[in-house]
Structures are given as C-alpha cells and as structure tokens.
Amino acid sequence: MSEAIPLPVTPDLTTPIALDAQMPHRKVIRSWLIPLSQRVTFYPILLLIFDYALLLAALAGTVFFAHWAAKLGCGIAAGFMIGRTFIIGHDACHQSLTPHRTLNKWLGRIAFLCSLTPYSLWDVGHNVVHHGYTNLKGFDFVWAPFTKDEFGKLSASQRLLDRIYRSGWAPGLYYMLEVWWRRMFFPNKRNMPTRRAVFLLDNLLVTAYGALWIAALWYAASVTGQSAVLLLVMSFVVPFLSWCALIGFVVYVHHTHTSVSWHAERRAWSNAQPFVSTTVHLTFPMRIGAALHHIMEHTAHHVDMSVPLYRLKAAQKKLEEMLPGRIIIQQFSWRWYFETARKCKLYDFSAQCWTDYKGRPTSVAAA
Image 1 (cartoon, rainbow, N blue to C red):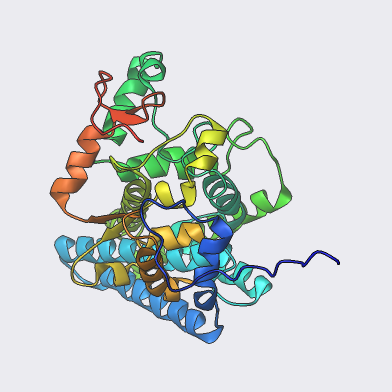
Image 2 (cartoon, rainbow, N blue to C red):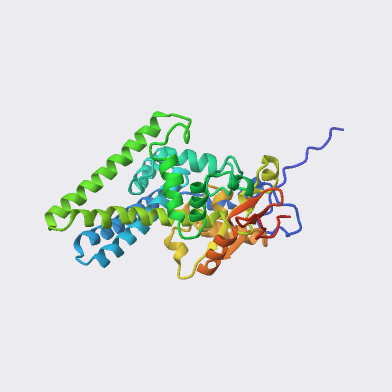
C-alpha cells in the first residue's frame, strides 16, 4: 500500500498565537495580511495630487504673507507636507502603492522630488539594506548604535556629534548629514561603492528640481518686492530642514526603544524574528498617525512591505490581534521620547541591552 501524502496545512487566520508558543514562520504571519495587500490605482494618485496641492498652498503662504512669523509657520507646514508626499513615494518605491510597477516608479520619483530624494539610491539604502537587515550591526546603518569600545575609539568631534544626534534634539541633523548628504546626494565611493547610471540620473533630477524651486522663489521675490534671501530661507531652507527633522524623528522612534534589540551576529538576528522584534508601533492622539499616512503602524510594514499605506492600520490591528504581547506598542509622549533618548546611547551586544555613554545598562537585557 502506498504511503498517504499529507495535505498542506492551511494557516489559521483566526486563532491568536499564545505568548509562550513558538513564533510562526514569517510566511505564516504574512499570510494573515494577504487580504490587506490588495492595491488600487486611482486613490493613491489622487492622494499624491492632494498632498502636492497642500504643499503648494503652504509654499504660497510663505510668499504672500507679509509677517515673518506667518512665513515661518507656512514653511514648517510645507516641511510636514513634504513628509506626507515622501511617505507616498516610500510606498511607491516598495511597489506597494499601485498594482503597476512602472507607474509606481514614476509616482515615487514625483513624490520624492520635493524632499530632494534620489529614488534609486533610497531604494538601495532603504529597501535592500534597511528592510533586508533591520537592526543588524554592520549592515543596517540607520541609527546603528556604537558599543562602548567603538565610542571610545572615535575622535573628540565624532563623539560630540554622536552625543548631539542622540540628545533627542537633533534627529533632523542626523538624517540630513548621515543619510541624505553622505549616502544619497551624489555619494562618494566610500559611502556608495556601487556606481550605477540611474544613481547619477536621479541625483541630477532632484538637483534640477531644487534649482527650479530656488529660481521660482527668486522670481517671486522680485515680483513681490520682498527680500529674496528671506523668501529663500522661509520657502526653501525652512521646509527642507523641517522635513529632515520629521524623517529623522520618524526613523529614530521606529527602531529605537528600550525593548528593541540590535544584533551583531547574523544567526542570532535571524532567530530573533527581526521583522517583529526590531520595530515599534508608536500611537498618537488626535489622528496624528493618520496625518502621517499611517507610517507609524510600522510593524505591519516590516512584516509585509506589499501592504499599501491605505491598509496599514487594518494590517497592524490584525497583527496585534494574532500576536498579543509580542509587538512593541508605545503611546507617544515627549517624556517617553526624551527618556528613550537619555537611555539609548550605546549598545552592549553581549548583554543585549542599551547603555549610557559610560557603558552602564539602561534597559533590561533581552531574553
């Protein structure tokens, strides 16, 4: 008699996984989100048009308002809107915005223009490196913590800069210098050894957009009879710096928490299910999360990058229902934020815990 062939096991989509049970394979976890990975075409296009309209309205305010305080407020608002358009581009770069690959590439480039982000270089740094090796030291470079020994070997200026970055007051400076300037805007061979024609073309594209932006502001200043320098500061510098502050903050709080682990060894990192254990779901009052296109529902995004931003809230809810007690959920407050910045300075990879700059543990060692 021939041996019976076992039927494939259908993943249970309704029963939560007990906290003391083994973590399911990523394929099983992703299967829970399959119904939420369906993409549409027209809604994200309309969303991008809407966000660009709000951005242009904010920039128009920097031109037509006379008082510097009103100009400044509009410039900061423009920075926030740059962040919203960037999140749309971020989804397009993941091919999760619409069902059409070529359309996603062009929508992503259009959405990235106002943040001066070269699409192809963001693709490599974010999609390949960050998502491929989240919180694995030596691979994922974004907000990677030094050890006590590494910090001690830095120059005095490098140590000072790291203290500034991790003070809680300068996430934008970190993003602007360490991510955008060093690794995306015409990066040198040391920071981007791979040289591709598309990298140069995307950099030229955002440079041309930036030059056109500045030229338009210069013309607007001459037509309205106001200071060109003041207008450039309020309509270009302030929005860009505000955008950097926003993205620096967002990336920091996504992966920096006393319950978030970093790893120096690849096998241990893989065994820790990093797509769940290295990501924070930060919650906000007053629908602030929705205003950021639900990018703070970040665990679902790392589990399955194909889930579009307009379904992330439902996907995150599903994960938290199925994996109770395993996902880091943090209600935002400025007290929590600065407490995290105070505690998360360096990392002890042998003890699997955060430390201060003297190497004293500031978090509970990972199990």
